[in-house]
Image (cartoon, rainbow, N blue to C red; front, side):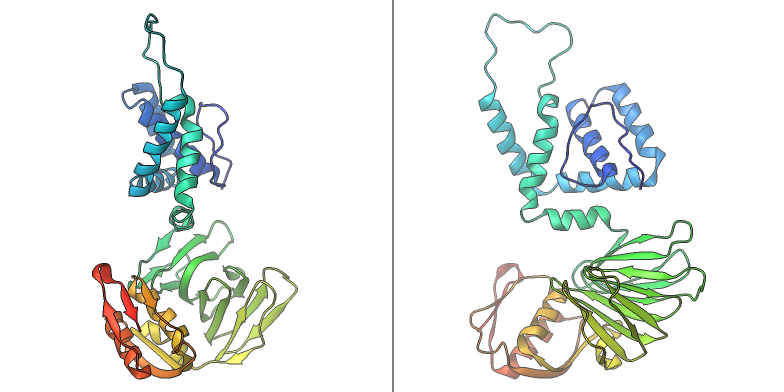
Length: 338
């Protein structure tokens, strides 16, 4: 994406590394300060219409600003700045255009607000800004990519795509996705996640991104998995095989059970000889609310099963029953396991 800084507000610094988002932030706050400035509105309209990326970035900023956290932080910033400004002498009368109180500290306020929200909200906002396709908890979605390949997004998943020119590239920003790739020997298809890159020419496979590892599972065809930390570290997979990649290494190839690895494509979750803690973590991705364990006595208990995903709370309760745990539901959907 080009260096787009289409504004005349001078050099301002924002916390987002994407220059288009920087420009969108700039326009948003300038319009907040001068909503009736026809020249400004006209210039903004031209910028917004010049590129679909401008429209997308501005909408993301507006959505972020609508968060309750943004309103509270904005009040705090305004209050701090108001206390810091020296009061105007009573005998001084403003002449000409009204003084714009908002704009002089605009950049700092914007950065402060988004930085404060960012303690907990920024990772999610960054994904929202960067993603081309996204799903929320409990939702799955099939996407037809520009080359005709299909991407099926599992619950709470986001991807960004780049198909300009000869590129066929997908970035898995979070979650899990299954790719059924149209064969094209002249245009390799690659998926980049947190710790790995998967390159194919035509195949079907899934990639899951967790906090500390990526998991790649191959259903058919052939893929090459390489480490982002050490690109020379590469592993070839055959159908029915999988690997995990971390910040330090790629695991050995392991056999996978397709009926388990790809069960989510049929609206199910399946697990064999997995710990209660790991399965509960999986189910929480679909549930979308907090699950609190009051103890750890069940964490390492091995469990087996297959549950439907259209009612994740029922699946969680059934899983708890298998290990002898009880479940209490609190307001807001919070589940207490004990």
